[in-house]
Structure formats: C-alpha cells, structure tokens
Image 1 (cartoon, one colour):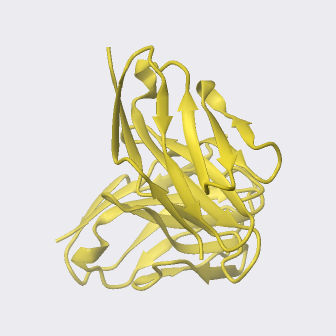
Image 2 (cartoon, helix red, strand yellow):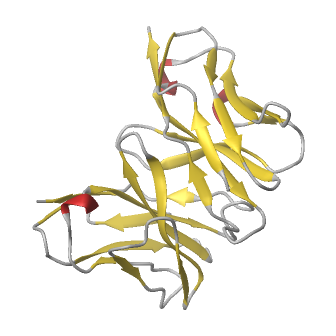
Length: 114
Length: 116
C-alpha cells in the first residue's frame, strides 16, 4: 500500500492564481481531511469528508473548496491564492472518524504564495 | 469547546534521561486525547491515544501518557530519551459528541531536542 499520497510536494503561486492540491489514499478509508500547518499554530482543519459525496467545513475553510467524487481522492482547491495561504498542507485519512481510528497523514505540500 | 495547551514550546534533554512533554486540555464533553509525532519534513504519526479506557496509555517507541481528569492533563513521558526521539510532538483533543463531533484540535507543538 502506498498509504496517503500528496502532490505536488512544493508549489509557488502568485497572488490570484488557482491550483489544486491532490490527495489520494489506497486504504479504502471513508474519512479524509485537509489541514494546514503554520509555525507555532499546530494543525488546523480546513475541510473534511466522511465518505464519497459528503464534505463539510472545518475551522479555517475560507478560500478553499473540496469535493469527494471517489473514496480514494480528496482534492483541495485554492480558487484565488493569497499570501495568507502560504503554509504546509497535510491530507489525512482514517477508516472511520479520527477518534475511533488512527489518522494516516500524507507527507505534505509546501505552498508559497507570492 | 475543545482546546489544548502544550506548556512548553521547546524541551531539551540528554540522551538516556527522561522525557516529559506537558499538555493540558479543555473539553466540554468526555475527551479523546492523542499524541502525534512529526519528524522533520514528514507527516504526522500517531504515538498513542486515550479514549476513556485505562488512564495510563502506552504507545509506540516506549512513550506513555497518563490521563488525569482532575488536573485536565495528558502529559507524555518516556523513561530514557533516544536520539531518534528528536521531533515535534503534538497533543490533540477531540470530542465524541456535539456540533464538532469527530474534529481534532491540535496544540501548538513541542519541539524535542535530544543531546548526545
């Protein structure tokens, strides 16, 4: 199993550009989530999904969209990038919510918005 | 509301000495508590979790944590530090009910340095 994979590993954007961060898992996990990690802030939940076709907002959803058309994939879209979105983004998955099951994290995408 | 406070942003120990990383939590309901570790340029890995079973929880790599409801604490300990323990550690709280069901709330992290 590859586990949770994220692409790209690094990305530089200009303000106003759009892009999609990809996340895929091959463990047949129902629950997937996106976090951002900023220095001294820990991880904050952006969006999450409890299964294909179902998504919901986390703590810091503004400026981000998600969709979940398949169990395996959970892309995160930045519609119009802003410097405040410079961060490291982690995707995670678990079999059933993050309480019952261990969350498996991807290696992260380091995004810089100029 | 759930929140976590990690009392030390940095902890330095010598190899072979005990490790103590402190965490206090706030939760409106019965909490589930976790410790995650992040090695440089890596994703997070679960060390251990407490979900209302035994109050002393054993995790991987010799770490353990004790849930103390009266002190609202969930400190992480290890009897003898190893160089490979150098990493950032996150205390995490969640709730099993309410409008934020299933969400995890991360502390700001404690950077552990291990000196040879």
